[in-house]
Image 1 (cartoon, one colour):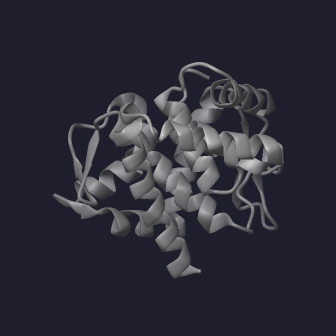
Image 2 (tube, one colour):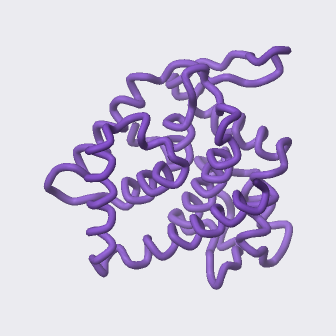
Length: 215
């Protein structure tokens, strides 16, 4: 689990029981998957985000090849506005499918899930399994956010994404979810977390705007 990036963990925890993205709320889940990829590349210093403009900072590492679609879109221009980037990737079904499959294939390679074809015509990719990995991820989130002790940046980012896409309720009770949100609020007061929350909030606001405008 330690060798998974933010977007890989996000995708796994966002899959429905059939191994795909449910039609209801799918735009929100798709949009926050884009956000997870952007955040992961920022955290690895591969891209930079400044004043809502995204630019390439270095070559894409081989171990982040599954985010090539996001990286290439940014590298096509010297600088691309965050909203333009996120909107294009989230609303273009072909691009999103490529990203979904790219990240999903890494989960298959890690023996986390099995890839099958589903849907009415069998044309949609489904990533089946991964329940034990999901359980371990949720337990890690629970341990860091609902118990005493340090909270990693990865946990702050992943939990914020799951709050944003409304899937947190699938893994935590209503009481736990509120406690978790309260812990996130308290972490905001720590100056150490100021930069990471500013980045997450900025991207989340952009995603929320896109969801509202697309409907």
